[in-house]
Image 1 (cartoon, rainbow, N blue to C red):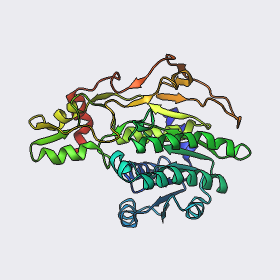
Image 2: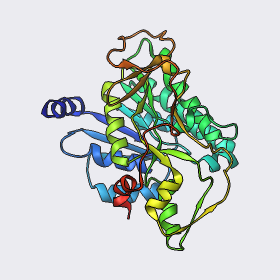
Image 3: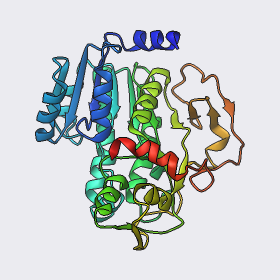
Image 4: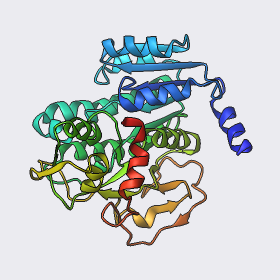
Length: 335
């Protein structure tokens, strides 16, 4: 463990880091972690549109290494200005709601696809070393009405393909995808906690399953991804799953459950790795690495990991199942 901590300290020591969407749930949690003394970074740049939330974050973190930019990922000139001198970029800004994306399609495309292109291009232009694009399980085999999933799938493709544009430069890109983050903005946990007060929880289907992960787990996973990436990979953590009804019972065991029907873009089960990706996937012990089908940009070969079955599908329907008590343990800090 000491050796791992020492290696981590060496990687981040004196680093200049940027987070797009810094005022979101992930951006805020990631910034709090990176500003801890053990990382010893030199500068943290945050980019978001929500200046009111920036004021709150600045006051909460109270660290002179933090520099916040009011900006939109659709403004590439603003991104170039903010990313000047930055080494590592976490691209977390997104319109991340399935129903919101469905009813606001042009906004979803402009933020999640055009915005991602701008972050990748601006990073290349100013000489950023590494970029991790935040994705989602919704990107894998998205339902026909799941525009959010389609935009995230496109963002992943861009994160892989943009390595070709940087063959003669130092900038490298990868993506990281995971399941539902318990307690994050837009997650079902705050909704269930609120509905619990009235004694009735709404669920779209009694057999629906989802992957679950806590915010601290996500933060440490994405930091690890930044440390080990060499370009072109998609990283996926080992995650358990449960029926949504199990989560509901863990939060409000006495509450009435009302079935309201599946919403546009929702799937019965989520998938983190598809059968098409399985032949290119390695189990690293702490997560999975999906390797690109082609690497025209060259670079250092991928190493390590054990192959997964060539026809494997990593689905919430068949993943390790969480019980009510295990979910209550994960949820305890939100109560």
